[in-house]
Image (cartoon, rainbow, N blue to C red; front, side):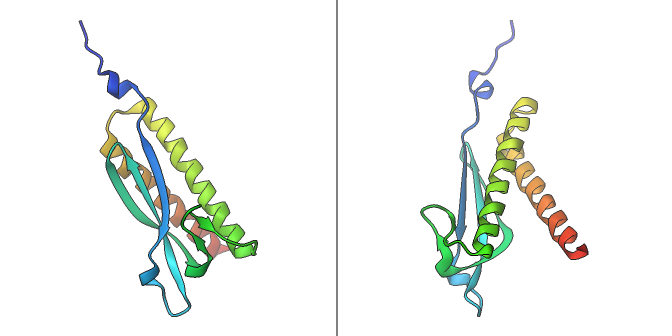
Length: 124
């Protein structure tokens, strides 16, 4: 008889947190936006390679305030990242049972996509 670990067949607990470090603001008052991914207690943190003015960031909603094109662009990017992480989670749950590898996989996949977008923007 084969035992199935019920915990591994259940959905993994995933949380996302977008945040800034106010103390790391540059001379223009802008700071990097970071993403923390927590999956069943395992954390992965990285910069999403976007900057925002400290006074434009709403930590409660984890988004940029205002209707300026820059704020809208940042919020759109945050939404795209959230969707990509959840999509990667769904694919990974079907294919694997390792939480730690999943966090590393998300970080790698999201960062590769960010690097691709940066390179694409440079070409345009």
